[in-house]
Image 1: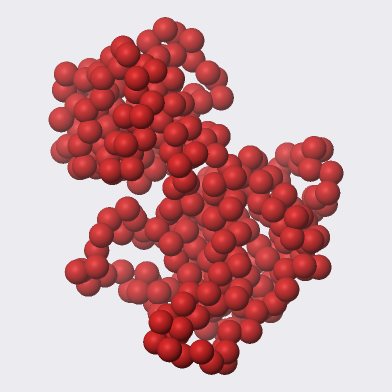
Image 2 (image 1 turned 180 degrees about the horizontal axis):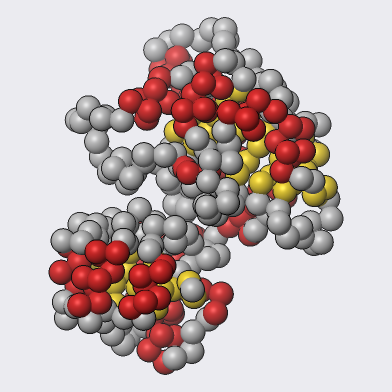
Length: 329
């Protein structure tokens, strides 16, 4: 099987090359260009393509892939809201993903964002480098004894719940399907979780139902001085309303690994560019906001798991032994 990997970064190449020896029947060609309707033409002669969470797999792109004989789309990520599933089903393109590569990687990054924005680590790092050792403006709060609200208790949300529990926090959560194995978590309604939590961490997929679930109305119900962390999908938060809440001093801090309008920025070096998006620029201007570049997944363990599962998905497709939990329908 010949696979064309789009938008391949150096860490992708290194990780896949390390595990490729275990899959001798697979050949991979790496290109740094991302897939679009135009670049889909490069897939001619391949059996499958591999894309990432930032790839725009729309109607035009999928039809171009189909015309080139592509019947397998490998996603080296868990999310698939960037894929036009209706068109993929119509064309008979199989989509396989990596749903559980390393929940702890994302959860640990979520807590790192929460801790950093709480204790103003990003501000203090810059101050000390300039020989400014003043503590003014750096006051945080104890997480011990506070309430952590977890929205979504899949594998990542459950890992975040365990971390918060380890910090001595009371953990409450909202999920459409509460988990009995998280016996230290008290499941509540979404309004209750948002209104009662000192730390809110989002760990749910983006759907039509929860699009902009964090908006002016839900922000108004939150505690003053709340910390909000999002490592899931940018579309869960209505950015304009978030900015209004920040300006109204609603939040002690915001930690974002994902955000709306990230598509042209994430994974790219744009240090010489003027950012066209005023929303992104405004978020970056606030002293109590930390933004990272969709990097929560980026650990050695996660990359190895992503590589292994992606290539195993390709083998399973060839052998018609698909793992149903990895199949996007």
